[in-house]
View 1 (cartoon, rainbow, N blue to C red):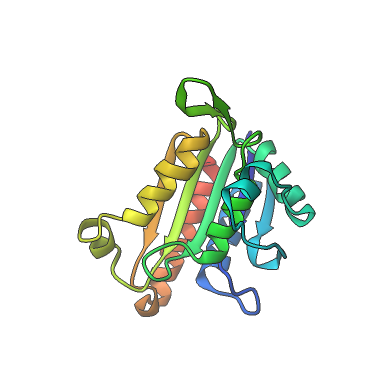
View 2 (spheres, rainbow, N blue to C red):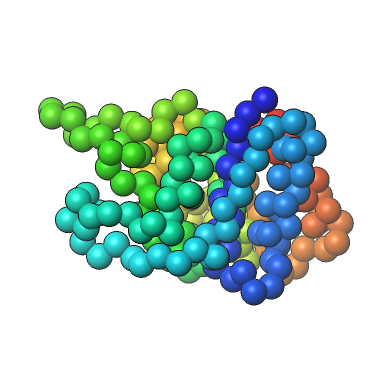
Amino acid sequence: MSRILILQGHPDSRQPHLCHALAAHYRQGAETAGHEVRSVNIAELDFPLVRSQEEWTQGSMPASLEEARDAIGWCEHLALVFPLWLGDMPALVKGFLEQVMRPHFAFEYEEGNPLGRKGLKGRSARVVVTMGMPALIYRHVFRAHSVKSLERNILGFVGFSPVHETLIGSVEKLSETDCRHWLAKLERLGTQAK
C-alpha cells in the first residue's frame, strides 16, 4: 500500500468543477484499495507569492503551507489535478509550488553540481489536466509544453519519477458518458496508485 497525496489545483473552491470530481474519484479508488490518502485543496490556502530569489532561497515559507509541505514529504505518490488556463497551470498552482518546493526541502544545492541533489526522490506522480481544447491538439500542436515543463522542471527536478499525465480535453463538450468514463479511469488509477 502507498501513501498518496492529492493536490487539488482548481483555483475556484466556491463551486464544484470537473477537477474536484476527478480528484474525489481518484481518492475513492485509492481508499478502496487500502492506500493511505491525504488531500490538499490549494484554493483554500492563504499564502503570498514569492517575489525574489532571496525570498525563495533564504526566506521562510508561510506557516499556512507547512501542513501541505509536510504532506508532500510524507507521500510516496502525488496526484496533482488542475485546469489548463492560458495554456499553463493556474497562477495559484505555480505560486503554491514556488512556495513549497524550496531549497533544503525539495532539493539541496551541491558544489560543482548545477542540478543539485533531489530532495524528493523515491516518489511518483500523476498530473491530471482538464482543458477546453481537444487534448490531441494540446499534445501534438502545442506539444503539451506547459505540462512537460511542470513534469521536467519542477517535479522531475526535485526527484519525482516516474511522472505520468492524464490530459482531458474539450471539457465543455463532454457528455455524461464521457464524464463517467473519465471518473472511472481516475478511480482505477487511484486504486493502482498511478
